[in-house]
Length: 319
Image (tube, rainbow, N blue to C red):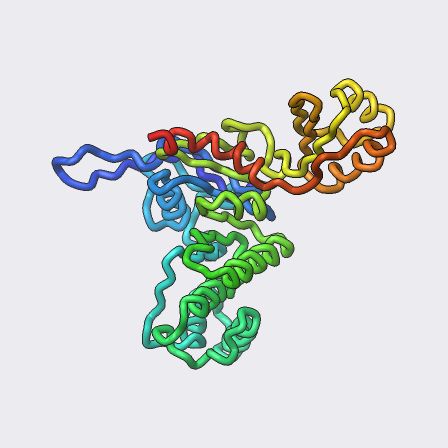
């Protein structure tokens, strides 16, 4: 896979005050983000996520290490290909939706004012703010501001989209809308960094995952730190069978050339097979029933994937 963005051997040390000890926010981490994939950047507060994002955006410089974009050192021109949705949305209170997007777009597009206005109106329509184009930001609800923030982050058609806690503070409808937006950008092939601590969103949206803990990379599905498989390869769909032994299932798998399970766990008379996708799991249903074995459970279990990821946060939970 093509690496669009890479943070290589990056360390960031902050020195807050003269008499205070230096604080290591990032400790020699290397992150890879593949073109066309959604990668989750996960960690508790203080794990180093925000520092890493600020470094990518050029708001701070690494103490050591470097950031690469398309294989070249990150530059001002490269950063023009990045869209950013902040956790806390703040707009100039005296400007309207249309004025905010026109001002933002002027930083990236050298087109005429009429051409930019056409793009702005098209984007406002996409996020459902056409009727509010002349409303000032200070009079808008949280949900409307989130729609405007999404429009601002994507209006210049970036190659890389960075989302910092995009579900924070949203009601159920807002969360569903945000999820649909992310899925639509994934479908278009946009490279996305989803920075969050919400594992259910990570497991349902991301192709890859990077987990930070206390400034260190403790799990990565892209460069074999703590794991050798992508999040999409972790077991999520399960078939629980009563009456079958593992050797019987292995014989059936070879004989009928069925997809191989990711995990197999025996508990008394119950055998649980874990698969990474629905087609693989469902292809076992008829062969199992034809042998007279009983299917006790079949379905999607997000919590199982989350439990496998939570092990990397164990230290925080036990403090």
